Length: 544
View 1: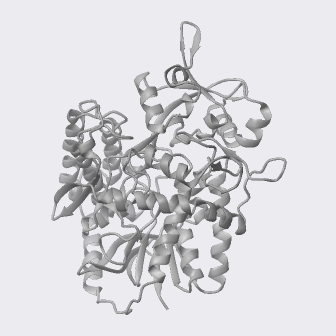
View 2: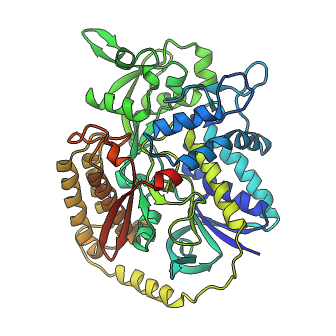
View 3: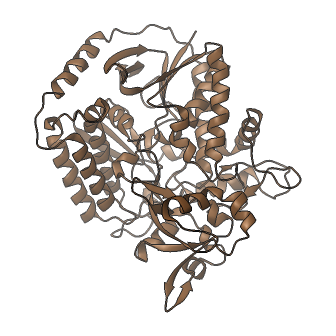
């Protein structure tokens, strides 16, 4: 029986695990925390799908066109077509496993408008779509756990891949329960580790998604793609721990953005872009808010109370809990914040990386979204990518023979012990905080060569001292050994942003403010012995 190791138990990881198990593959599902604590539960807005014959006038072709247009031509043609063509099938499957979508008075699933879409095609579960899908997938996974096809490993972290001669044979895991490393040899490894939130400190996402896995695999030879495309969500509120997302659903239901001038409300998006201006793509709205100083107001108070209570209850509750704002009476002060990473591990149409038997799915894989993701496409891509990877793995014949990695294991154990003896006035977490400050300052909504070079200089300094930092016993060991790979990923991200000398989607250069047709290519970056090699690859936008 084939054996697959899946790192990450959010929606993409669970979707892949369930699909693998349904095809008779043994799955080990690894994560530091239960699925109910994954970033996936934060997805509030909904999932895009086209159901033929639903009377909306929508079509798969329109979904494809909107997705490619929103991604400024960088979303893979074949990949986007596959994603959109399977959206209706995925929606129906979610219903069969217990996802409860909001319905109208006739019992038909309801749709809402999201930015950059020509039709209302975002299906939702109140304001907690991600939670509903996670709950349904957890129950489906438990069916296969009972059959012995899925085994969960909690309190475990990915440490490194077991790679020899360009083939991945498994992974080295760090088990937090006993603080030790162990080898897991399998026929395929699937990374489902999310984006790189911790690079930026406070974001709308989970700090569990820190980019370490992508950075470590990059150092081990995996190529990365389109790292410069970082989506800032235009509407978030500040809290002590993080930025809380005010879902795009709030604007999809009619919410209006404004600023105050001369004792009047200026509805700037509507004045500049027309009646649907509040639903421009996220990169456009974020830049407009940034140009106004970074804080504006979102007004929902004029909406019918039933709409707020039925469709926007999470927005209502978040504002009341964290800012003591009654959205039925007063506007919400909002700012843009890092929200989603279009870049990540470079994968082919089958979601395999340039290393054989190493796959990536969900947000950690760069595939469908090009230069800017449309709201509602992330949940769809998470499920679809898991299915694609699982089907590819199921269709392969593997010999089941794996090299001996015991020497690598012993070397890593010695390295971890040696790191505990390092001395420095600065603990690891101090440098992680400094990195977040650097990334927020120099890789923001609007960039320039001067800013990016300053950021690069900061990161190079952090890298120069990373091996001499004081071991911080007050945090999990993972935080200590993960720093070098996270810094390496940060440097790769800034390097990609420097290399793209144009403005496209979520990457805006004040020194190159126009889109350049010559740059309609994927940015591929590779790492070899400390050297970063960047190329623009036009072919990758046709495949994926």
